[in-house]
Amino acid sequence: MKRLLIVDDSKLMRDMVAACLRPLGAVTFEFAGTGLEAIERLALAGFDLVVLDLNMPDVGGIEVVEFVRSQDRMRALPILIVTTRGDDESKARVLAAGASGFLPKPFAPAQIIAEVRRLLPVERAAT
Image (tube, rainbow, N blue to C red; front, side, top):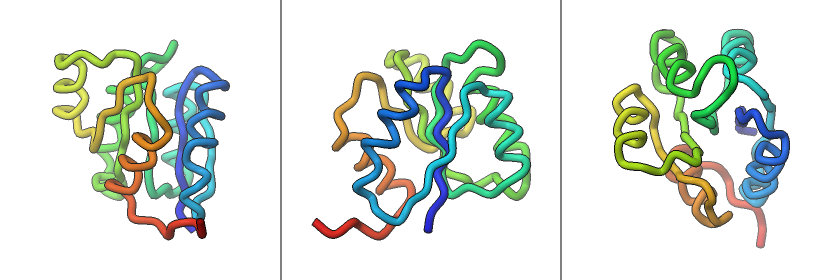
C-alpha cells in the first residue's frame, strides 16, 4: 500500500485530489492544510508521494520542496505540484527547486491520475 500526502490550504481541494486518485486502488491518503504541517508530517513518517499546492499562508510549496530535497532520506521522494499558478516561470521555479512534476489547476481527474502513475507506479484498481 502506497502512502500519499496531499497538501493544500483548501479542504475542498484536498478532498477533490483524493477523490480523483481513489481509482488508483492501493493507496492511502494523509492530509496537511499548511506547509508547516506538511513538513511536520514528512519529518515524522514516510510517504511514497506528495501532492503539494504552491500557495499557502505559512510555508509555501517551494519551501516545502526545498526542505524535502535537503533531507537525505527524502531526497528521491516524488513531489507533484498542483497549483493555480500555471505560468512557465512558476513551473520552471518549482522544477528547479526539485519538484518531480507540475500540474496547473483546474485539472481533469485523468490528468492527475496520469501524473501520479508516472511518478509512482501503483497497482491499478479493478475496472
